[in-house]
Each structure stands twice: as structure tokens, then as C-alpha cells.
Length: 173
Image (cartoon, rainbow, N blue to C red; front, side, top):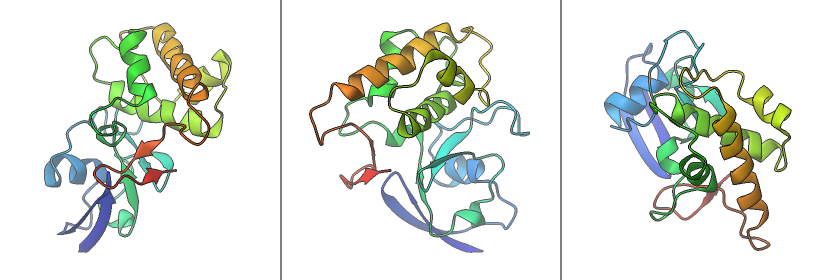
């Protein structure tokens, strides 16, 4: 089946098998390996991406379901080589150890901050329930999300960092 998908601001058209999962399309067809395949059962959250501005587990979405969609992966958070505050927060607050879950957790964190720019620790933990990390114990991940929230609040009016479609300069909701 032919699909046309915009991923990180770049529109691509490909013929894909009807049963190909979005995570495999991103990794194998587009070469975007930041999205990880963890459990293949939607339990771990390592494969979270944004589909039309909403976080989804890409191991549960067929690529053909994304025809015409706008997808943002962890690679699409950074803008012009500058880390997004979520990415920066994970760096500054040591929110990762092995790093396997990190891309999906970052995308879930981005969604949390889009829904609530000033989440409490409990709200962050609840928002991350679909993401499993076996290394960190979540304390530093929560600190990283709080860091990003503060950094985004401190941005000048009208310049709140958002995911920007790579190469397009257009903000992604």
C-alpha cells in the first residue's frame, strides 16, 4: 500500500506492506533509529512517538494508519542542533542510564508538558506510567521533566520551545 507521511517535517511516500508497524517503518524504511523496539506488546513505551501531536506507541500503530499523518520522533525534538528542553533536562538531571527507554520516555514527557506546562511530581509519574525504565528508578526522570517545564516557562513570550519539524522551521503541536 502506498502511504505519504510527514516525519520530522520531511514528507515521504513509500509502498509498505499492509501489516508493517509504524516503528518498523520509522527504523527500517526511514532509517530513524531513535525510536526503539522494546517489547512488541505495547508494555514498555520505548517506541513512543507523536502522531498528529498525540503520543502513541508506534508498535501498536500500522504504518498505513499514518497515511497523511504528521509524525515526530525523538530526532524531531532538537531544532537546528539545539536540544529541546526535554532532551536537555535528561542530560542535565541524569535522567537516563542505559538509554534504551529514553527516546520513548522523552516523547511521553513532551506530551505531558504539552498537556500541562506545570505538572506536579505525581502528575509526571502518572503521565509516565506507560514507559518502563529498569535502570533509573524514575527519580531523575521526574527531575528531568521538571527541569524542562521550568526551562519552557522561562522562555520569552511567544518563544516557548516546541518540537519543530526538522528542516521546516514549523512548530509541531
